[in-house]
Every structure is written in C-alpha cells, then in structure tokens.
Image 1 (tube, helix red, strand yellow):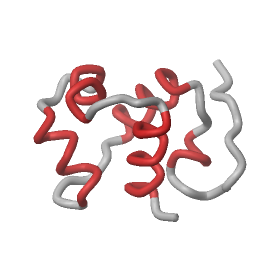
Image 2 (cartoon, rainbow, N blue to C red; image 1 turned 60 degrees about the vertical axis):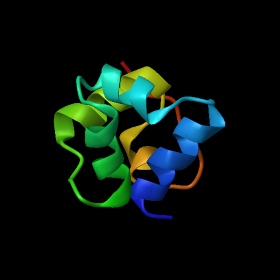
Image 3 (cartoon, rainbow, N blue to C red; image 1 turned 120 degrees about the vertical axis):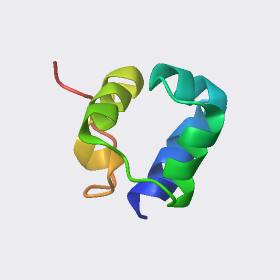
Length: 73
C-alpha cells in the first residue's frame, strides 16, 4: 500500500472527511484531496501533524510498515 492509499484508509477508518483533515493541515478540502490523489506531495511538516493527530508513526503512515505503531512524543 502506498502512502496515499494509507492516508485515505486511516482517514476513512476514523470516519473523517477530507475537509476535516484539510483543516488540521490548514488546507482546503481540495488541497488535501490533491495529496491523496497524487496531484500534490505530502510535506514533511504535514506528515508530522498527521502523525500527532492520528497518534501513528510516520513509518506506518508512509507505508514502510504494515502494523500501526503509536507516534512517540
């Protein structure tokens, strides 16, 4: 699973909308949609925010590992 699919899967598992995640990242729904669909790249700062919000490791969110591990603060 690539990181775009993982981001979408995690978001949908939590019943969150693209607008809700976009707001966390200070982006519009369309801006976040571009990340999930490949029209824009995920910035490192945004990855860190998502790790904190979802309490998941970056390795899991970007697809390096398949077992969810909590984000360590």
